[in-house]
Length: 224
Ligand code: DC
Image (cartoon, rainbow, N blue to C red):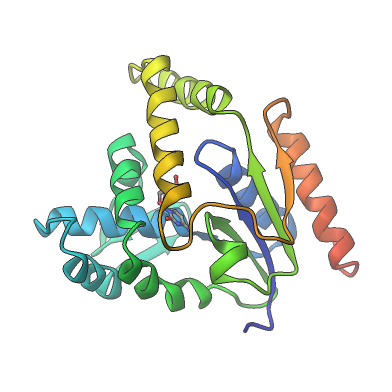
């Protein structure tokens, strides 16, 4: 399917996979695909166009037409900086809903595969190892308990000066997990050949070290 090296990191929201994927990509000097950002962008583009999320064809059109540029740490939608806007809880919940639409997933498939370029790609998402890059040489499925993921999110929000409620974050995370894991297409689940890493009691540094070690053993010529 692709000749570039691919390291797939899948898992539920709050497992730390976004941070780990970005750090490992930085260490290896590889490209990074934040596939969740694409689903968040489709949700935002659809809301801006006033499209009903139940209208699968119209949402899939948004996915196909998505005018997005990833520029360093910034994300531009139709040339407008939406970096912070797509990170809200609301954008995450909308992304989870558009992610349940098969035509949207199909529309984003080739766009995601185009990120696999030399020297390699670290792909972060829910179905990187199962659907988008089934031939990825290294697949990691990163988890953590719902309580621990809610606690991490709570701390992030408080640090940014937002108010937050731990109990409702746990409930939201459970609801999102349930929707992502039970949807008909590309449900959130480990690939048969994925290594599962439970980060509940690990620091980010420990997870980065664990994932990097797996990359180094799969591709012995790599230097970090
Ligand atoms: O990783 P994230 O929290 O930014 O993802 C937001 C939502 O997008 C997630 O709840 C489900 C959806 N998503 C998906 O369906 N498939 C992916 N590969 C990535 C994200």
